[in-house]
Length: 186
Ligand code: BEZ
Image (tube, rainbow, N blue to C red; front, side):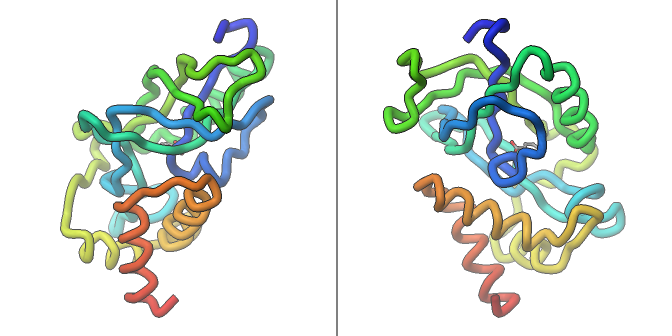
């Protein structure tokens, strides 16, 4: 994909269900070698500094595949869109470049099956990184936390619904959804 056509952005968290930025195409897509985990602390969206919520980041894992959505951002709006997203994700995420793949059901009109894309990644050295924990403990934290953007439960359930809508399976997300629904009687 040339810069004249636009810049692809891969969303695997809230960007799957709440992009809130200008884009000219939206396509189901996946990235290989990455797995989605609720390992990033959120002190500014789904939690507060004294009680951080948990949101997703991607962890490198050979053989893994993460399903999400690719958005094509037009050149005319790219500077504004990425400045806005950099601000929104300033709580520990860095922008990285990688290759996204379009499944055959979502192939582009020009036949392209992959494209270079940007995504936001929380690395383990950022101050809000929480890392791994037993799933029941992560589920309890999600069930409890809320922040300026809403409850952590809403974030998890919307992500799980959006992945189902895409026909994607994510055992980590779906097991957390099951645990949180049981814990909160949802
Ligand atoms: C995402 O949906 O891809 C995303 C959103 C916020 C931070 C990192 C990733």
